[in-house]
Length: 458
Ligand code: ARG
Image (tube, rainbow, N blue to C red; front, side):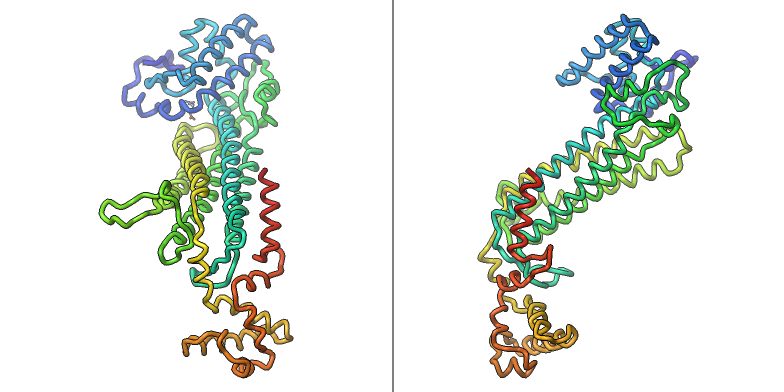
């Protein structure tokens, strides 16, 4: 049984039920490295300030470094009976260096220690996840650049709408992911405050130097209210919220690809290496990875709610409830990391079915807006043009005919402005080329966007 940091005041042993129920070592062991790095900075400060002797400082640092080596080398065996990672490391240090270890916890508490550990952990994770988002963006840009001239039927309300470049649709993903990356960088700014030295919640009467610890650990600023320092979990909620938004994007991208890989859409073929089969239906090739990506998003949203609900009724200051922020946080981070990794690999394993797609874009209803704009350019009002094209579409649907097979005389009956040259715009390539507004699906503009993303993501 690990020793309790607070055991002396207790006249008797805690129940094993208490120990098991209150322990967080099964999950906060993930913070070991940061706990030790924080302690190393703290002990250096204590010795520098003369709060402990230089000699004790050196002994403690020696012990901590040797534990850190075990942690980094994956050799560290956590004590399952420890209350938490802080106690576990403290006890190990006691074993390694003896009496000087008793001075490490001077002028700090586990309340500010856990805030420090999670902030250091999240600073790293925010950077690392943003890096993985960038990898995914690059994979999408590569896929778009490999298929620059493919025009697909675009959808609104999941009903066939207008022609767009596949690359344009893909770059929509890149835009959304860019905002996700920005949000993580932005969260990092608020993570990057150093809370250690706030102690339990009121600060300390010892002559500490929090600024020194801040500089040692490369934080940009100090938290400036000791109560808020141990009370605040906004930075965790913020990361969870950022991951929740990011995961909604990932889920929607997955949904697009699931639809596109159906026989009904038939836009893409996902390589066998990224699909699974059916135990009963021999013909099946299922996009299970994409479905699991979509499915994982449920727990990522749930984890955000979990921590928000956890915090909402807590009195200001530290409460043990807050220990429970870690499992949801870690789960979301792990899930998003896994999704980003597999999604990046999957994007390199999709083939575009150009021939099948070109068969779908013969549906002339895709060009109705182009005909409306053709008439507007000839001076008709938007309303009038919309009515004319509406009538043409209705008649063609009723008769099962095509606009392109109407004679010049038939066209004229709809509007004297409607000439045979309108037929020239009734094809996918003409349709996308007619677009001119900034941000539209015009191939020249999309090519420019592709080039700019390639440069930005380099
Ligand atoms: N394990 C706790 C947490 O994750 C930190 C320990 C503080 N415990 C205490 N009894 N003051 O928040």
